Image (cartoon, rainbow, N blue to C red):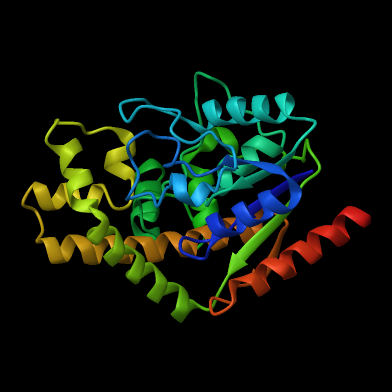
Length: 287
């Protein structure tokens, strides 16, 4: 059985995945593009040893910050995990929808072209401008982010819709926008208390400017602060703003690209949400 836990940042995916892993005696597999990197811990809200509760966690900390790790690499690694653990229940958890789809669907990539860029770091306005630079006659609407990205990744335009290779159930955790945005803001504040600034400074002092650091939310904004381009307050505000924007894009991908079964999270009694999800999964197993 393959279960996938998706959703925006801050909704309890880690807690849910560990609870389900205990219930179904499963291993947990990362599908977050930033959590594959070693030492990017606080800024990625990576699961701690204490939070793992003894459950095996795979595909976390598998690449160095200096590495250019792509969805092509992840696809191969994730499918290897699936093939090697056919006798076990597997729980994928994370917020990178493209990684999950690449692992479970017949997505075609070549090692040379690596991956279609998802342009997480760009706003719709920036994407639109980039498309016009590519073709001034381009007539895609500025709010149609999916088509803008497909236009920039031209080799992906004419590919048929990928089909699933493995039977799986996708659970999405969600909440109302006001609650989500407050949780995101609170999470950033907690990251700072936990040492986010020091974590990023350690990479900055080494002169590292890799893909993961220059595009990862929480890292790229603090690099601007260390470069004296913005104040610390502005950098932290940008982390919160960019995290909120990223959450919107996550919802767009999950709603249009994957068959997600959504559950509203009860933050006052998370066990109730766990029970709802378990009941749904048990029914799915029976059908």
